[in-house]
Length: 145
Image 1 (cartoon, one colour):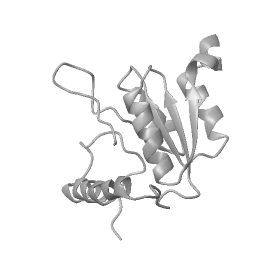
Image 2 (cartoon, rainbow, N blue to C red):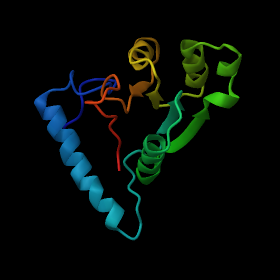
Image 3 (cartoon, rainbow, N blue to C red):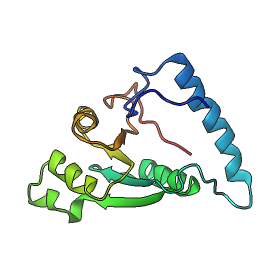
Image 4 (cartoon, rainbow, N blue to C red):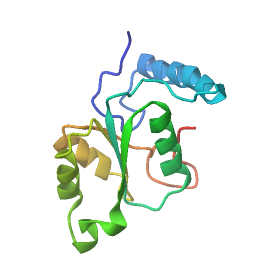
């Protein structure tokens, strides 16, 4: 079975053509799940995903959360506003504290484009970012349906 060669998914720049095709093929197959009476598959059963969003988000966070649930992941939505971040805890310290819970994946949305890259270097968990690059009028954030 084909798989990604990287621990983290921080954009498409580091992916091979084959890996991009694998992602597109997988997304196409999973799209059919939304049309079934039971909208769940066991792809992430037994995996823990933490959604670490430092920016307000409706569509992106909801899309990721729904996709994670449909893939049968155990999820934790981390509320930055009610955490020690509000008292000055750093991004790295927050991630390390969350890693003590042994998540498999941490989805990071942060206003700094370098934040997911930093976490990919200091975290054992896989880091996924829903951001395709710096926000601009030409580049939009990606999101899963």
